[in-house]
Length: 276
Image (cartoon, rainbow, N blue to C red; front, side):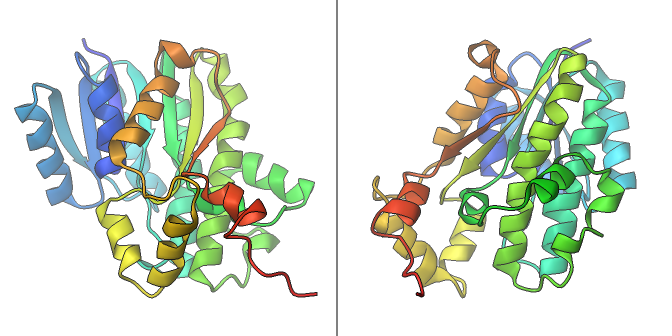
């Protein structure tokens, strides 16, 4: 029986990581859109991988539970790649919090119950969470450790209507949740980490670059120290490192890889004008 790698979100970032860690394993490619999952499976089969599709809606605990049950039924779950989510131009604030914040918490909880010894996981967060102002220690602890079913009732999240703010809160929460889950995963002999990419050219990013915040995102690219957007393969390389033997001493961590946008936002040309 082969080890199983579960990929949640069959988009370019998740697939780039899966291509690097999925050889010789059963790759379960799950997406909210059935046609996307099937298309990804065909790509992987054509490239020599053993892959099967699945449909999952990560805003719903029962759907996640069914995916975890299916993954565990295929064999030892040695890897989780979580790259599903919605962006500020794709959904309402309420939907972003339900998918990106709550859904991630449930995924880490439920896959953490079955992850095999020696297994590892990667969550795709975002540079956006790093530009959110500091939260209180109490809010940090709640986002990291509160039972998933209680998260959306947090006072911090009430009245959030701006989609970018909802996205930033969700991505900050993803990184905190990784920290909160790392000790529990460690008791099973497994590791969990996050990657916070900057603007990486994917269909989702192209949607943002032509959406209502296009000028905002283009300014970030042009004003970054690296001066360009990233590629899925660059994220894939970091994800493979974190999931593989070279990352064996890394858990509960987040890798910010954004071409220096966050550094420039705080200390360089992208620094917002401060109102006295």
